[in-house]
Figure 1: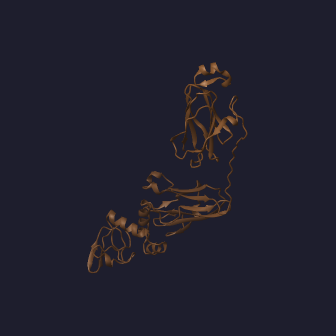
Figure 2: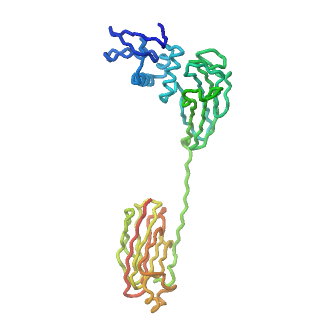
Figure 3: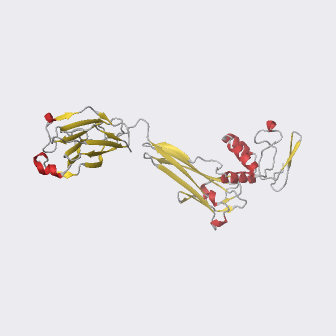
Length: 364
């Protein structure tokens, strides 16, 4: 059979004649009778001329197993092989190779690298320069197939270098290896420099059965006295627990008045790392707001909030003096850790006082 690329050939199948401008390859398309299309790699030679036909062929070729691809390639001459490799390279697939691998951290792994250089054009290239991670490979040490053993990379010839490296990677590392090829003269003569570089990436993953330890530290305080001048426990009531169970929503406490009030809040459904805000209104008669998180550890003290005339009249009830007007807000009072409870304590030492407050969880 004459496999010249420059001629036109007619192939027969089931009594039909098929003719097209030849690009390459041993493959038979029988469009009128797809049910009896011969197996891939038929000895019938059909010349493929359109982009759709080439795309269809490449799709069928890539779907073959490596063994089937080898059998197809074994039937081709050097020119056909070179053209097939050029089409595969331009379609984003080389003729072989594995671009990635995975190894386990902590123990030596043997990585086997294979570098393959081909000439996909119609012009022999003398002494091409192949660099592997920047190191020029010795052309005389390559295994050369499809041609002679000199240092000219012929059309359809393949040069291969294979070597191993032992790596002990650390977790999360990427071991990258890149190879490039260029001619010994002006690189602009290369008609497709887009396929002159290729690389591999080896991912390092944690070894199975090994430790992954974590540690956190929190602190809390107990038996802490309140600010000076606060009512003692006998003059402080503890109200039933309330719940904050939604993010970015204000939860309002029941209003209160004279002496001390403790409000425990359940924040167990709120995720750790959430910050909390408080806003309050003591109106005219001064009151004081204290937030404890964890319970017993003061993280916020508003000081006396209200109107100055009450402090001036009864200074003994408000040690330290007035801190600000009755209404106020404090954002980022604390960030939730392991504890699921927060305590808000309000002190109103003067009869006739009234107050209210709300708290909010700002989930991340």
